Image 1 (cartoon, helix red, strand yellow):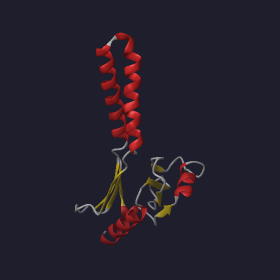
Image 2 (cartoon, rainbow, N blue to C red):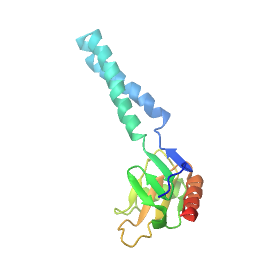
Image 3 (cartoon, rainbow, N blue to C red):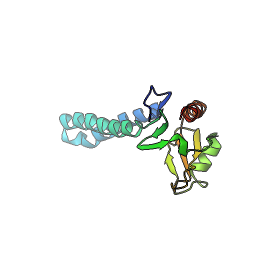
Length: 153
């Protein structure tokens, strides 16, 4: 595999409103600890906010990259030669493929707060995975990067 500058990289960050929820979680912890005094109240505010922020940050830290001749989606590394023609899914189709059309054997890197997605069939006969479902804010750019990687491979 040839390592080069990544032609495509996307981080599936959590929406801004989730960070407000982190603050509200800290406020909730502070209110729970209010009867115990000011110091526990401040500890609850700081600790609750920090814990919620860590969870939100880790959930939104997953990345999709095309590097060399491979698609790297979260922990999965898939050679582009094992992938078929990608299908861009609009918000309604993406919702359908996340729910009633979903195959339990598919690799799905989904974030429900991202409305668009890409579905890519896996053409490797030895792989039991029928397709890869990727939530992405920029499906056209990802398709272009995958096609460029296929032509280089």
